[in-house]
Amino acid sequence: MKIKNIFKYLIRFVFLQSLIFFVTSWYFDNFVFISSEHKFEIYQSLVEDRNRFYDFLPLGWITIDGLFFALVLVFLIILYSTKFYTYVNELDFSYKNSYLDDYLILYLLWNSFIFSSLYLFRITGLSRSNLFLFSFIIPFLLISFRNSEIISTLLGRSLNKENYISFNVNEFSNFKNLRIMAYRNEELSITCEEDELSEKIIIEVDKLNKIVNINLVILQIEKLKRLPRGLEKYLIGLNKKVLIISSNDLKFNTNFIYRKNIVESKNLYYFNNDIQYGSKFILKRIFDILIAFILLLLLLPIFISISLLIRTFDGNPVIIKQKRVGLHGKQINMYKFRTMYNNSHEARDVLKKDNNKSGPLFKMDRDPRLIPGLQFLRKFSLDELPQLVNVLKGEMSLVGPRPLFKEDTEYFNKNYMRRLNVLPGMTGLLQINERNTDDFEIWYKYDIEYIENWSLYLDFKILFKTFSAVYKKSTSGK
Image 1 (tube, helix red, strand yellow):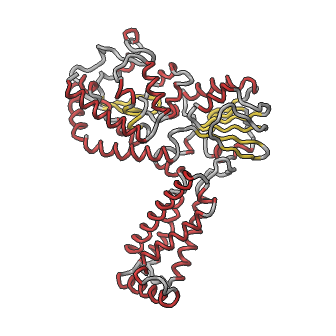
Image 2 (cartoon, rainbow, N blue to C red; image 1 turned 180 degrees about the vertical axis):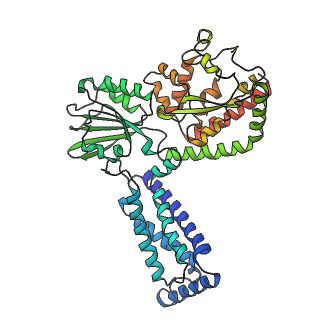
């Protein structure tokens, strides 16, 4: 096992040890032990056992909390020695996309261990009703932190809401029972000749991604022994999950990280270049939630003031919803303070001839749709503040490419479609460098640069520079 994987397992182990020990100790102290006198009697029993059986341990080590810590440690060591808990292979067969079976196994394992331990150490006279409720809590924590799937679901990215497109995978194929497909929804299935596969995949994936969110691309091949160079390059740079089912032992043109399994005499090649997935997605979402929540609290007086100002100038609604394209092509309602007259977006087609931006960008130096007196909200991006709600909902991030309108995706080529594979953001590289640019190619440059260099550190750096840029703009008066 690589050092990086060992380190990840160790961090998760220490986290689970701390969490389960804290919950167990706190719950017993507050709900299971009848009284402090009862707890002291149990402590005396532990001291008596120490004097009889393991007097080599220092007396200061003998505490009820110490016992709970040791029990949790032993249980987790046993649990981590099994592949059942530590390893979830998306290429395993799974005929039921439910976590209930796994929960029941963990429930039986934990409770058989903890109740036999309580009996062994003579911890009796406990509140039975509260102990019964406790029996469900720890298995829930264990399955929640088993891997990134459930935590990602709680943070707004569920496997069951992910979609895939397949090529040459038979409708009745047993491979559709693989966990990677069983837990996701098939959006489109295409059959074509293998010599047409390259062109077909590129066209269909890009076309479908403009309509619905696509997270996974699956292709089955029988004759090819090597992917066409252009197709291989496209799939690697797609920033999605890719599964190739092949009758042959494939040779690749470039070196990249993938996993290979043999299932039913077929070679399965799987690689995941989704840069905001698993632990990376979880860390980004936690960062977004914390900062967005704090900002919403701090900026509440500004929200109220802007709302009153808009109502004074042009009535309701104060906040509008605009249909934009989000992560993996998913349609989202993006919130903004209204700075234009009602239904102004409908006049966009009429005013296209006056558009002084390139590509999908639509901005006018003197837009007649703007409400007089509210231009400063757009100047200092105050109209974007309601998108903090989008961030909390998981539809946007604090940092990422700006979400564009659905009709704007017609300008996206196969390379620029990659911008849909990261969460759209309130701010990004463009906003801290050349916010008012008229050139769509510059948008393209900064969006691709962000995708290829994404990290939490980069997000933090962009966010900090955004605050700095807004402050400089307000003090300069430009």
